[in-house]
Length: 65
Image (tube, rainbow, N blue to C red):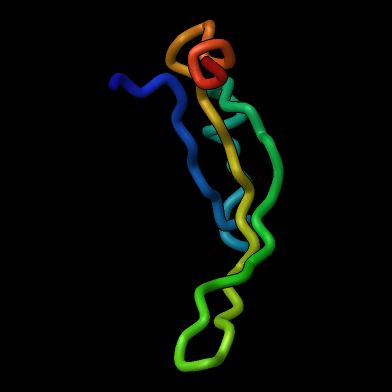
């Protein structure tokens, strides 16, 4: 397998994601800020913006086939 799509998570409380926007990464949404359950307690994490960058122009077709 060869990668066709990259993802990156940017902490919105610390960074604006300017370099991703300038490099044509696609903003696709935001995490919910929920972590794993640890000893019966949920760990709240900061919400992060999700950016995608395609390495192949036909990435949708490749991922859906």
